[in-house]
Length: 295
Image: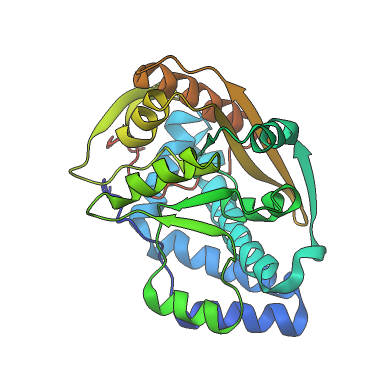
């Protein structure tokens, strides 16, 4: 199984062109229809990611063997739909979907207090469309999204050409770590910083915690940063509930000064809660637990 996260999304410009053409010509349902064949392709020809998601379903969610096999395909389908939804929403089809705000008052409170805050999420659900929710409450552009999963440059250029690039504020992770200063500056201005805490790159510092009964590595940066800056922390997720409906969760947590491991443990418990309710919406397609169990 592939144990390294490569730091960027997979996909091709041609694939995006086909789906965007379908979206604009025939609507979301037509794009979903093509996805049934694309998901089947990935089941058989993206073996590393298929093995990784099968391991998650079989050994971490404790699904039966055949339910795990079926659920691999279902997982690819849901993941593909979240990508289509992201492109559709950012291409002007926002009103084709409905949105449910659960705990949004917690984010509003941080914005009103203007003392800064950190929103922690994970690669579950469709956090990339969180900006849709944020636009409802963030008229002053006080929320910064930290880009941890950079698109390939050719894909970014194409999406920009069709008007699918977010207008929200982004902080891009850089090798020289200058993004840390940008995060600090945003927090000092009383703004919110939103980032994920479930992917670390090989060679970077990490913390270890048990997720779904098995130890795994997590990037140390988000948890050390949040525990040292004494900023309020919220756990935030955007989960797909039906083809046209999304549910945002925003939950408060307490942070002890310089207790990164304690914050990580609370984060892991929060992620587990989401995965128990939405088991198919785990989208880390690599050997997250660095395990080699097969069946």
